Image (cartoon, rainbow, N blue to C red; front, side, top):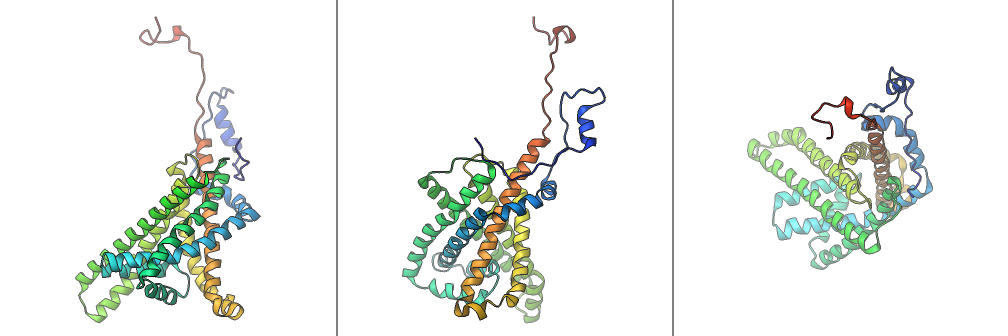
Length: 332
């Protein structure tokens, strides 16, 4: 029996009810307007906030945050190793560095610079791969439980099944990140060929094109990753059409939240409270918020799916006698 959902369905208005009934007073079929993600946003803001206020959602988000921090660093070290030591592609390496900094809300130069130094050690690269395998499964395990609950799926995958799906998702998200980095590298190469090496023109094009292209490629990577998680991770059939709008909305909120969090960090005074550990604390809070956004998107995608089901007209069941049919449709 499916679990109780926190998704609220908006009742039909009197005008809609009258349209459904029809002028004859009969109701052979319900005709509903098609709902979209904006309709879901309108009707699900309060239910989603209530959902995010539950203790189990906070538990899932903190679990995701801890494992996301553990997996992010070895993943970037691995990407730097692949682009720098295996592919020997300086432009792709630089694009990975830029995208890694763009994903972080603060202390980007310190964190990514430390990972660049770590990527030069072979033993660290092997350890990064092992830690990535372990921690990535820890990210997706609580997420699967949360997504299954949102979609009303009672049965979770087995431990082995969850590990295999988690490894596949980790590989898929890493591939999407590298594709975005490759797109950024190609755009940088094209710009350098067009404008040459003049310092003033380089500075002007960096301001006018480099930052927007970086944001565009990073935004595409975030939306693609969110979509992949929403679509693949639940232990049941989920429509790609239902989760794509939620992935776009949460991708926008991710970028807006990052700007807001960066602006608020000086007011939070983490350095005064936590001393040398303030960088880790700021990352943990940011990862927790991203986990909350992920779960909010799952809730909205499930709402969109239910509203689409509500929008489908019910079939008319009528008994048609053979005398009212044309001769070529009548049974002999």
